[in-house]
Amino acid sequence: MTGAVTAAALALATTRPQLSLVAEPARVQIDGTGSQTITVANRGSQPVVLDVQRAGFALDLRGQPRIVAAARAAWLSVRPKRVAIAAGSAATVTVRATVPRGARPGDHASLLLLGSRPLVRGAVAVRMRLGVVVVLRVPGRVVHRLAVLRVRARQRLITVRLANRGNVAEQLTGGRVVMTLWRRGKEVGRAAALPRELLPGATGDIEFRYRGPLRGPVIGRLGRKPPGPPFRLVL
Image (cartoon, rainbow, N blue to C red):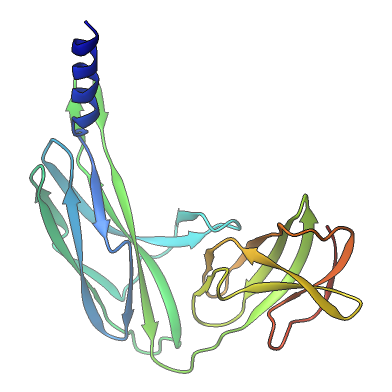
């Protein structure tokens, strides 16, 4: 009896789901007018038909992606707009970006939505939707400019609210964004950033987790060479 139960459990574990889609890459950057191919793999057990659409794209304060009611990007086109993929197979979609006349230099982000047609099983209609971020980088002067709006510390989690006043998307990671901690004019520790992206013109929170031995009041500064303006923290 135990062997039969084990065999049934293994069969369930190895059974492919009806719907399982993967798009690679999940983020595309096109420098100037150009195109790139996205591969969509159907790892499910059923064939699917995908409708491809454009949509507005933004990140909330915590960096979570969301679809916004914005005008569709005129610079973005895609072929084909509908694609059928057999179970276990893959298909490609070509994204093309064209720099509009008068476009400002820097990054312009949009979202490509790949939505499956309803797969009806009994009384339930199953659908799946994938989002691929497409960024057009318009040639010109690149501006990196981050402004600190607010800082707060709670249970050794330091949250910094930043405004991206530059013209390119900033990849804020522990390797690129460092918070140094100071006491009596001496650097005494660092805090690592939890990674996120900040789009041009957007405001968002970046979090630093401090795991060292420091306690009490310190001075925090973003960056090391040179460090940014100081702000007071209590750890």
